[in-house]
Length: 432
Image (cartoon, one colour):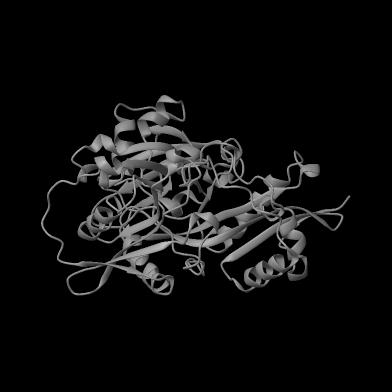
């Protein structure tokens, strides 16, 4: 038996897709209520298996995409496993960006599981990412028990919330000097990249959009759900500074009738943000607003006269992070406190170079530095714990309480928390 872990050739792409669950109409997410799904069901229905025409279309697009890096497992020439990374840039604390490998579309066919093929593909993808200068890997975990053993750990969250229209009164505010406009899909495709770029500049955890990110927007109905609608906000100078995609889905039950689902909403300033929500939460002939995949610390709650009216109905982790090069990743973000922290990283079996004791120095006059040291460590932590802390959205206290961080000096956990934490929490608006 001959096993190869390598990128598929262009003529092998159809076989590559056949190893992936979504191409075969198989489950691609664990059976739990999905916080990214706006419908009343726990999750969307499974897709039908891809047709030969669809596979050819995917192959043609992926072969041309220089940011797409597939890898596959071949056993005696047959593709039995597949995965890929997509090259992104992610906004990090301080407003800078870090090159990141987004792990996506992973699967091993049922007859070849439990043979270590996924680990071998992960190792190959890590090596490829480092060769491209990407010190960080991230993914959305389809099953929560799989990816921790490869060093990944939750770094951002998302929530799905509901708001009854009769409870959706906003606190008083100055009149909006701008304007709202309902537009078609063609204009929404032009607006979204502009708004996203503005938001990405200040939102930690946000990603550069992949090619064709908004190409699928349409004015056509999506089955009984009806078409997407697009709401744009312009400032007093006529410049676009916010956009929302929403839908008024049909319901077969009285309990879900009159629901408006906000599929996406972004604004580059508080005025546009309030204006978009003020219309969406008081839309004629509706009863309930549902918004999936929203930040855990949604500012809308604090605009309501009754903050309790916005009820979180589902919540889950979103992006999982994995540092591939500890010093390179840590020196490409900034820190709000001036400190010198010495820590020991343990247990990274896939990237042993990350193990050891490091001295992280942060001040306000120069970029942060991170270098090996012989000094006694202030604390010891696992690579997954450090990865969770990286974007600043996780609690060092909670990780320590769970045994992932061990302090060796007084106050070490508090210093770690103050160095890494960011406000608002990191969030990304789309998956990959």
